[in-house]
Image (cartoon, rainbow, N blue to C red):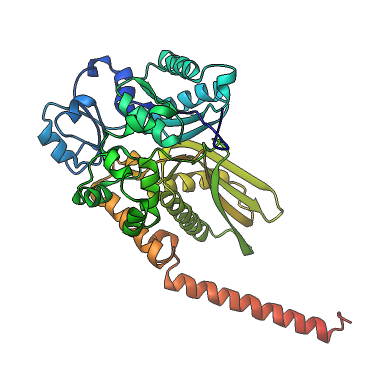
Length: 419
C-alpha cells in the first residue's frame, strides 16, 4: 500500500523474554516460578539479568549483587554461562534466517524482521505468529512479539506483550497505543533524559508528542528532535541486513620482518585493545576472533575461535595470544600480523559481567571516556606498550640498519656498480 508517496512498512520485533534466565530454566526446570538472578556470585558482582519474580522485589540488571540479595533474599543466584546463551541465540537466528526475507540481529536476544510487501502473498500477522510459535517449539524459549509500521513502535509493542505474548499495532492505532504509555518506554530515553522530561512535568508519551518539536530540539539538540519523532510514532530507520561477515579488523606490516616474540605479543595486545575500544564505542559485541600472520615468503595463515559474546579486551587479548601461539609454529620471519573480530551484534558490556566487579566495568567506562576525549592512545595497557629501554633498543637497531645501508650504498658507488 502506498501512503503519501511512501510504502507503508511492516516491521516485526522478536524479543526473547528474560533470555539468560529462560536458558537456565531449560537446563534446570526446578527454577521455574522462582526468583532467579544471573550475575557475579560475590557481593561485589553485578546483576546481569533476573526473572520477573525477582523484579517484583525491585531487582534490576546492572544492580550491585549485594543490593539485589538484600532486596530479594530468597533469590537463586546463578553465575552466567555466556557460551550457552550464545549457542541458543545462534539457534534462534538460524531459524529466522531460514524463513525471513530481511532480518537484523539487534542483540543476542532481539531481532527485527522487515515484512514490507508480504501482505500481498501472506498475511504479515499470521506469518509472524507462525514464526514465533516455531521458535518456541524448537527452542522452548519464551518469545514476545511486536508487529507495527516501524522499529520503534514494534519494539515498544514487544515490550508491552511481555511475558511471552504478541501485539500487532496497525498504522491507524499507533497514537492510541503509544499515548497512555510512560515516556520510559521510548528506546532512546535513559535515566538522565527521563529525569529532565519529568522535571518538565512530562510523564506520558501523549504529553511528550504534543510538545513543539522545536522546544525539544532547543533543549536537547538533535536527540530532542529524534525523541519527539519517536513519541509521534515516526521512525524511518531501516532494518539492516544481518550478515555473519560483519567484522572489524586491524593489521600491521613490519618495516623489517621479525621473529621477536616479545614485540609480537605486545603488538597483539595493542591491536586487540584498539579494536575492542571500537566495539564498545559502537555498542557491539563479537563472538569470533581471528589472528592472521604472513611470513616473509608471503605465505599467509590464520586461525579463528568462536567465543561467548564480549567486547572486553582483557578477555579478547588472552584468546588472541593463544591463537597466535598455536598459529606461529614455523619460527620463520613474520612480515605481517592481523587481528579480526567478526559475527558482531549490538550489545553492551553488561553481557560479560559474570566475573567482573562494578569497579572493573567502571574502569573500562572511564578509560573509554578518556580515549573519546583525548584520542585512542590516551590510555593504553602496559602489556601493549614498549618500555623506554625497548624503544631505545629499537631506535638503536633502526639507526644501525640505516648506517649499514648507507655504508653498503657507498661501497657500491665506489666499486662502480651503479652507472
